[in-house]
Image 1 (cartoon, rainbow, N blue to C red):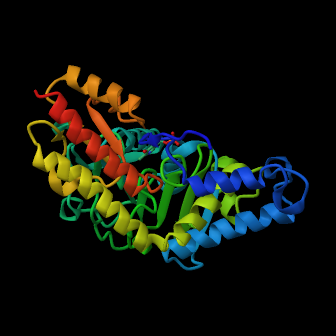
Image 2: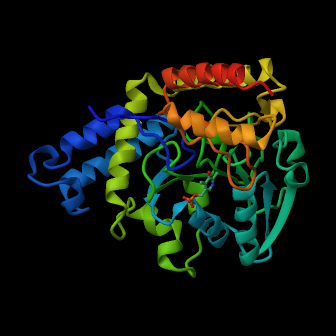
Length: 363
Ligand SMILES: *Cc1c(COP(=O)(O)O)cnc(C)c1O
C-alpha cells in the first residue's frame, strides 16, 4: 500500500482515494477495450458515455434542468476571465465586478481589455478580509452582467449568499468551492470552475451556462473562445481534455456515492468548524485573518504569533505527514484547504497536531 500524506494543498489538491484507485484499476484496459482511456478517440462510444455522464451528473448535483449547458474546456479558469467579457460584454454596455481577491481582481482586469467595467465593490484596501453582503452589490439594471468570485482561495473568504440581480446575468467563478456546499445554482446564468481545486485534475475547466445567456454569444469572436462552439458540440468541437473529463466524472460519481451534495456539505461544515474552533479558542495563537461572516469553508487562513513559529509549524506539520499548509506567497501565514477530498479524519488529526504544537511551542 502506497504511503499517503494528509494533503491540504490549495490546488491542485487532494482527490478522493476511491477515485485514484478506480483510475488505477481501469488504466490499462478501459472497460474491455484493451486500451487506456488516454489512448482512445474522443469520438469513441466509450468516451462519449463518459462525457454525457459527466454533463448529466453536473446538472443532477446542481439541481439544474436542460436549459443549462455543461461544457468542459481547457485554458484554466484564467481563460474564463477573458471568455466571459468577450462573449457577454457588448460594446456600449458595462460589466460589473466585485473585487474580492487576486482572482477576482484578475477577472476584472481582463474584462477591462474588452470593454467598460464598473467595479461595484472592492475589499482590496481591507486586504481582502471580507466579501460584500448581497445588499452591497447593487447592480444597475442595464449592466451586461455581474461577476463574483464565490470563494477567494488565497485570502480565505467566501460568499454565504449572493445578490438577486433581476434580469442582469449573474456570473460566478466557483473554482475553489464548486460542489463544496449546497447553493441555489439556478441563480446563476454562468458558472465556471477550474477543476484542480474541488473537482478533478488540472487541465479542464467546467462551465455551466444558461440558454438565454448562450444565445447572446456574438459571431465575430474567435471560434474557440465562443461558448456556443463548445455548447453546440457538447465540448467535442475539437479534442477536449478527455482524461480530465473522465476524472471529473469519477469525482462527481464519488460525490453521489457519499450521499450527494447535502451530505458533502454536512461533512464540510463539521471540518471547517473544527479548524475555526481551534482559532476561536486560541485567538492569541491561531489568529484567523478574515471577518467571521466571510469565512471560507474551503480555505481557512490564519496567522501565528511570529513568522518563525509559522515556519516551524509548517515544517513540523510536514514531518508529521500534513502537507500543503503554507499560506499563499502574497499573504504569508498558514492556509488550511479543506476541499471535499480532505477527510474528516485528516481534519481531526490536524486539529490534534495544532493542539500539541501549541503546547510544545508557547509564544
Ligand atoms: C485557482 C483559481 C483560479 C485560476 O485557475 P487556473 O485554472 O489556474 O487558471 C481562478 N479563480 C479561482 C477562484 C481560483 O481559485
